Image 1: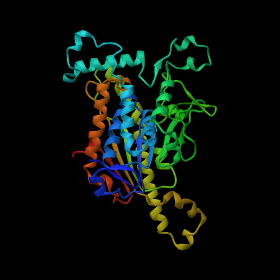
Image 2: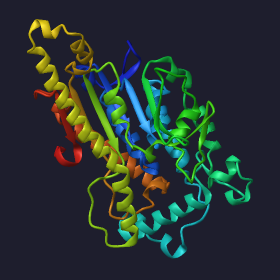
Image 3: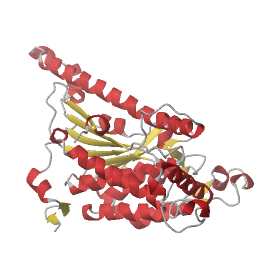
Length: 398
């Protein structure tokens, strides 16, 4: 039987009650972009919720922004169900086209070749027919619309997504401040990455849609007179936004990535295109992680140096300026990343079949359970820099 913490109405397991909250000032959930692969993030959140690890701050890019809104915009006990509603909606099993009869007799779960063909068939349906509650093809095609109209700037119409967000997300809750919420988007005119943050502005469905407006598929979203595209065009991870935000706090961060920096040497065109996407969309994540480690090391060194200054130098106004940025804070950065299956190719981010959604969700849930078997991920780091990183793909042997 599920038990509830009556103080905050969070559903918690008996194990979570016994363990208590980890010794960090905040728990952050960072969600990368990756289209249909985003069901992996929903599985990760389910695993965290089952362990009683509810984030204080959720930040996302693209599909990660949608998942973040579903989490921040619902009560803790409703979040997994709302995530499930969304992912079952966009991966509707209603067959627009039947899988070819010659192949339908084979179970796609029993062989990589048939599963690959089945996935490609589903991806073709998404390209031609869209995804329920998310996007539909623009008819007539964008070239036939007058220049300057929204219809002339994208292949798909995303108005269904706005209706879905309004139905599944309580934006009053997001703006109420119970959980900090941030999503990244790119200003089309300046090319700058900007973040819409619930601590500084009122969040609306348009902010979430802007973060996932990947051109030329989706149209730019207008907000207060400016137009925005998918934040993944500049950076596919919100890590730097969370790391750089003041005030600094001891942070347990779960970074959920959908693209793998490491992979096999491609042997055919579909593999080349998939590998290209993996490298392209994971590159900023790797760069931000390297920068994060370097900054934390510098902060720690400077903090220790300031502590050794004689009293007259320590009281200098320059030191007062430096001190807030060097306040020693601990960081555990726990990385969970989706690892593609052998039958997946470059269509994996727009292959919206129910079977693949369930596979991605289960993979995220499984990886989270494996990660949380390692007690060190929930403990304050003991090294001088106060930084601990854990990668389930490399260290998660449990």
